[in-house]
Image (cartoon, rainbow, N blue to C red):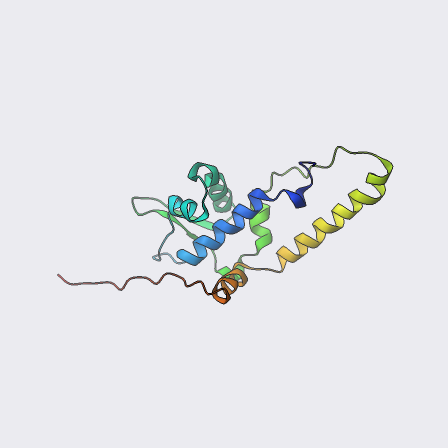
Length: 156
């Protein structure tokens, strides 16, 4: 199979959406709110921390995640879930090069390449119409419960 047929190879895009959803689900947003540690996110996704660190960095540079430094550091959303479109997550990790197929036959040029362009456009349109909040609703519908923050105990 062609490695440039992007609809069939969406590893980084899938990882970016999964990372954003995990952070939204477990930490959310807010200056003083909880954060999701990178190692914790990697463990929950079954990924190596080193492997997804570039995704965290790309999402942070794109203004989708906010990194918090320190011993209790991690990541939280930079914006509200309803303001984060899935297309933004995919764009944040795109390699930058559109990359085309190396094939050049008449059938490929007249039929397959235009079909792939149509499918790619449809996928982009669908991702533009979905937000992180939509995915959080799907998680709730699937019966997944977000972790609740422990109450503060001010006993001295």
